Image (cartoon, rainbow, N blue to C red; front, side, top):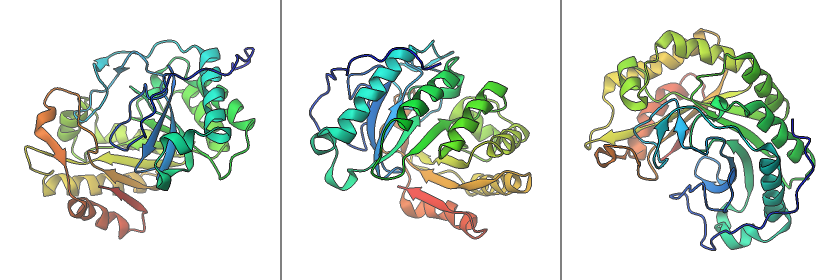
Length: 297
């Protein structure tokens, strides 16, 4: 529960350099749980909520930019500290000069608060409490434009009752979930995400979670040793998205993006960005069904 006495506004030991899309440092505001980023996909300022402060995740994606990533569980969350950090940071953004000091002029728009960070956010034992805390703080503020609430997730825990309950709360407050689906073939998902994930499990998780909260697919495309994913992988991906829709998944759309920052995982030197033209070749067949597809090259 987020009902602890509020703390005084926090003093943020933040650097003065402008935020850039090529740097999503979790320490950019000097806080434990709250961090600002300017995002290509958000087209503005995103306030991140990092519940995985120990850099632990149940996946190990090849393109991950988390330093010292480890496999494991998220730690307990200090909910009073999260509350204090978010309240103080929202004050800086909405009432202070943070936008003028730190955000490029063309991105001075608060787009969302995103549960993301250094691992799978729904793996946190305090995910539901953190959601309630964020919702309470958001409800106390007036925003210049509608604020989105986002969960960026690999979908591993979305069938759990407690997680579904928290996601329903977010959905009622204009929330959405970005579901990671990086490849269409199971062997390629294992290669990219370092998990064994069958098509059946992907389809079931998507169907369940899309009945609870609006869902976007998010897919990271990149070259390895200069070579983009082959045509059979692209076709398998398109086919899997089609199966998901036929299986009952209610998709808002698909976000395709490529590397903007270098991976910090072993083998990072083999990875490079794909061109917009290459990514558009993935987007086109999806658009032909009427799906909205956003490409961030």
